[in-house]
Amino acid sequence: MEEDAGKSLHDVNEYNTAVDYNRAGTPLIEIVTEPDIRSSDEAFAYVSELRKLVRYLGVCDGNMEEGSMRCDANVSVRKKGDDRLGTKVEVKNLNSIRNVKRAIDFEAQRLINMEAGESIKQQTRSFDANNGTTFAIRDKEDAEDYRYFPIRI
Image (tube, rainbow, N blue to C red; front, side, top):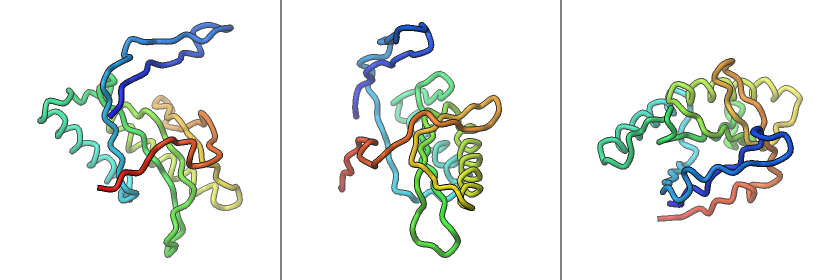
């Protein structure tokens, strides 16, 4: 659990960064799974069930398009028969269950196509729903850049 800290807006003014505090202090819950989801169809089903659960419990309305619920998908690929997952790429702030599936499908295929010769950079990407592609937001040098702490229960 954490609280929303607000967001920086870099495209409002050519010379300055604006700060939006409209959601500052709003409680946030982050759910992180093990890398057990093997396809965009499984991710679609998982997020669909999660949305049903938060609605049933009254946690939130689950309206992804309105920002009540978002999904970040970590995508990596591996060769058949290989036990190790490849370098992961994070696609941030997916705002619909349909776009979760579309973004994972696109990103997995992009990574498969890169395997032929290019090295995959660990990075954060965004999804452009208008053309169904992802684009880089920032590169990550180390896993520590993700600033998460695993908790064992």
